[in-house]
Length: 86
Image (cartoon, rainbow, N blue to C red):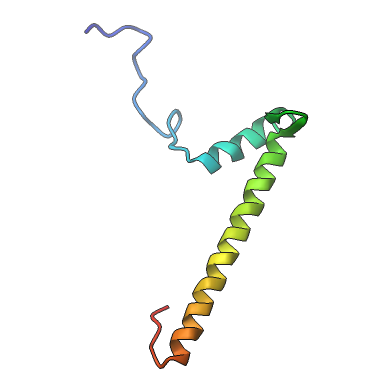
């Protein structure tokens, strides 16, 4: 296949390629388009900045829940005479 001027210099590099997860996509959208609608469901409309804030809140609550579970298992295993490898 012939190389055209439109396909030259398009190799992956830090300037034009960054792997994104769902959270990094939402973070970038919140920075670039903070007041644009991200979610429209019936009469509910949320902007990208609101969506990003909700995702961060959910993520921190989920992490806190996991930490509590680890802490609970640590103390329960010590109570039973088992050693914990945390």
